[in-house]
Image (tube, rainbow, N blue to C red):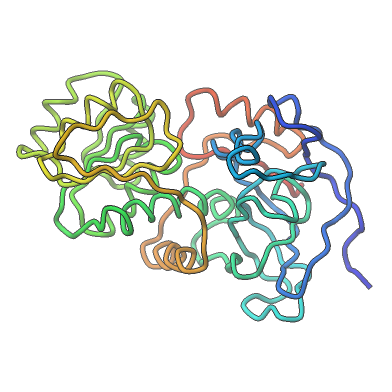
Length: 324
């Protein structure tokens, strides 16, 4: 006998499009397979990639033929309430978090979600349920760029462009943990203050001041590496702050595309989750006490407002509260 209902509240799409297409309604609770975990959702992260998915971007890019109603939500946290017979890494009652990018059984914008156990981890001590919900996507993307693409070494200088955003504010913490010298470019004075609170001493406001002279003072010969989480005129100017032979990493999808100068190695990459990088991120969260900054929290039925907020200035991450 199930100890959970057969139906649940969820915010769903019946067709791709604008935020107004997000509808709050009752649907069936997903069934779990032998390798799945059923999570009663507490919080769901809201990311810029959710907006792309809402518009049908991934369906078109990957030639998918998705079923409707379609549930967004590529990351979240909650409590394990059921599990398949082959699941051994988590137990009933555990508080867990997981990425669920393009999850075939639906995302975290719902009261319950079924996720393959290989993506599910117990929440590390010191990380709140709310922080855990929003850290997977941006954490994996930041870690992939810094460790796998840039191979950032201790003592190297790195510029993180967009440091007060979702990926950027985790990247600042990780780069510092890796022993690099971190120069952070944030959006607005509120962004500068937030990144300084995370322990990054050199933070400048990308919207004003003389970026070039600040960058030159920090790295007179040019930066060894850079992680760009946004594009545009200011970003293109900042490309010139790298030394000859410097390395740039950027997640695919930043817009407008970066204009790369000669003699710099620039690599775009995807932040897709897999068990290996999930374990690596989990280790960094545990050992280095990473934290996630959440600027706005909306209740699940107000997911439309959360998606509208993605288009305006905000710091860190946006979150949906599912469990009330």
